[in-house]
Image (tube, rainbow, N blue to C red; front, side):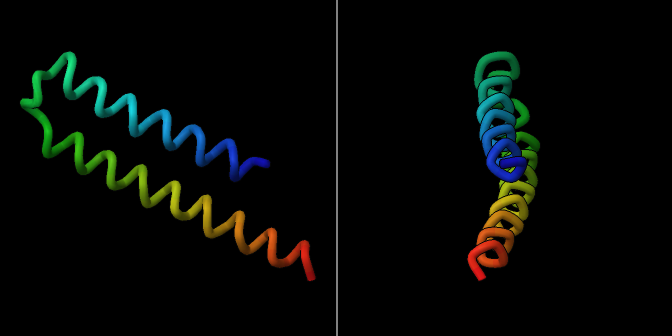
Amino acid sequence: MNQLKGLYISLILMMFVNLMNFSFFDDDYSGIAMMLSVIIFFIATLFFINASHRMKDAGQ
């Protein structure tokens, strides 16, 4: 369940980064926002891999 919460929080953070970039910074820092989104995506991928391994272990 913690992995699912981690994925959801990662999604919220990615949307928040994009919202801040579009609304407050007027796309001036789009490169930095994209880099932050990619880093958050990689973190979410780690949560997903961890969850899938735990599901495989619990199934065996």
